[in-house]
Length: 118
Image (cartoon, one colour):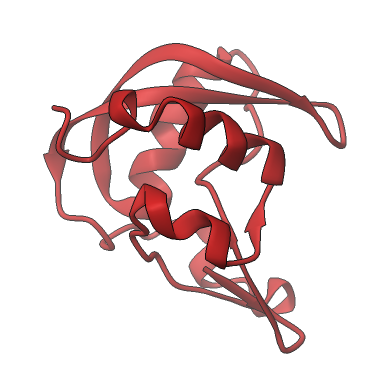
């Protein structure tokens, strides 16, 4: 969840791809930095054009404690406050979730992207 200038909205973990990194490697790194989770990256479920191409992947939890990430988003006050929060798939339609295109993809295949599906 992000709170930026009084506007609360939800985003999926993610960020920039560092030099020499593949999109899959970036997704794995961002999951650890933002959520404190070690994940195995699966298939790319969406490529969304917004300030370049954003890649979204299915991931399988390997280890870690949700909410223990220590990435830069926790310390950059100019970008608002960042609080990891797990939302069940059936709740995604009731919050301002960005990007909304990804919500539709996840809801259409919810049984494949469930937290319990490890």
